Amino acid sequence: MIRPGRTPLHIQLADIIRSQIESGVFNAGDQLPTEMELMKQHELSSSTVRQAVLALVGEGLLYRRAGKGTFVAKRHIGRDLLTFSGFSEEAVTRGFRPGTKHVTVDWHPADALVAAALNVPTDENVLTIERVRTIDDEVVAVETVSFVAAIGLLMEKLDLADTSLTEILERQLGVALARARQEIKAGVARAKLAKALDVSSGAAVLQIDRTAFDATDQVIYFSSSSYRADRYIYTGWIERTSASIAQPRQLIGGSR
Image (cartoon, rainbow, N blue to C red):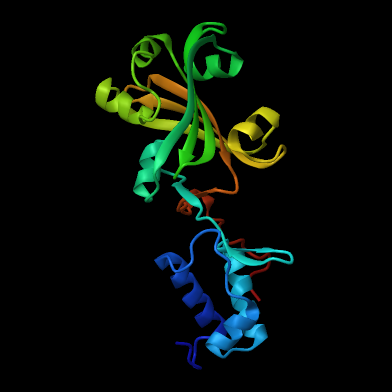
């Protein structure tokens, strides 16, 4: 129930629609009632309804299609920027169902990037696993993970389709993963990648490269993965350190 008070009416309406989305009254892809319907239902002006809808569009909960109406957007797949976790682990933690649509496992000579990350000579054979990953049956990422020969020989004997590679390493092979260096940058889906991700050629992707180490600082794997930018969002807390806080400058001649 919307009541006049301290909280602006458009914020109250936005809260109601947001709650309806979170509770499943409206699901991804559902069309929202028209502006006129919302006006009548909540006894509000068109400007108030429009403000509420635009606010939710700005949050990414709704999207508008010209001449069609306003629809509920798919929920973003959040990942913690500062936590070392695998694809499957993070998905399950956030209430999604991870899966794999396609997997290839093969030995390849390491190119310059992979060789540098794994600390092996260029052209040394490494085991490379490429998997097209899904969330709730929707393709969202293409992962390419390379392992040094010692670990690759063990990995290739296992079922790598729908199993978490992190779980295999830690629980089956006894590898104590400890830390990783990760780089996230903007990328573009060229024809082959676009087809795998089921997006238009040239669509934006998040390119994430990770070099993982065990507790003794030995390199375990290098991964280079492409995630759909329209489905993923990375979040994390950051803090100011004493070194980054600027010292107040002393004015010449003293303060005024």
